[in-house]
Length: 285
Image (cartoon, rainbow, N blue to C red; front, side):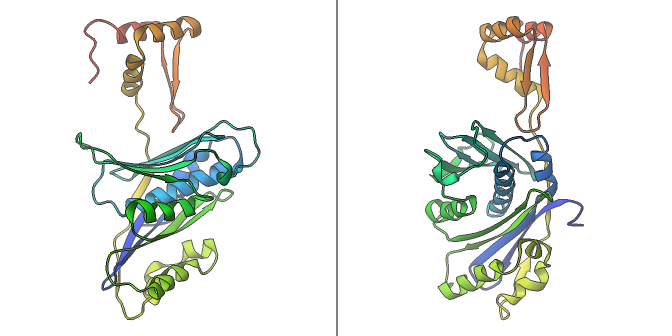
């Protein structure tokens, strides 16, 4: 598989140490997500970081139908969210209501970071929530300490101008791992520029961290942009709103128009489509 051609996630672990990690590139997904985005440049940076963060976190989950990583606040950054489906499809969007030209995460009121694990098949979702820190990198590390009770290291690399997004992740697992060994591993990934880290071959430099311990790299798994929006989902949403509210909007606007916040696809329903939607006996599967 050519890493230049597609986005990917690759996990790795050390044979006799309670230590695992992952690396990823989500350049194409990132470029697709930000292509029509307006607002402060920090929003593009954050979208890249949350995509990278979620891809790396997914390496810790054996089975899931959907993972959702989101930051929200009562400030100008209302919602920052990324989703991953079980097949490696990813999407993300940001809801911004500010007029500022810059964004300070530390100043956002009531700011939270949440990870939701949806196992599907009508099983209960799991969600962990913490307070948002000054940066997304700090927030992700804090999430693992507070909600997972396992120290984790993240290095998120995003270059908005070049459309690059990727990074590395390490997680300290239960077992005997000294603080010195943990610092050695994380310090090794701190070395060098962002671009040099992404371009370095992991099979060449990861064994150098602990030369006497074997490290195993799994095959890279492809990632891609994927949006789950559909006309059926839009129809379900309209039915949930109720016929009277939909009819009022139709009378005022002449057409019902719904734009997907993730992929910007526009769904339009005219009077005939709305009448069919609420016709007696209409069933949405």
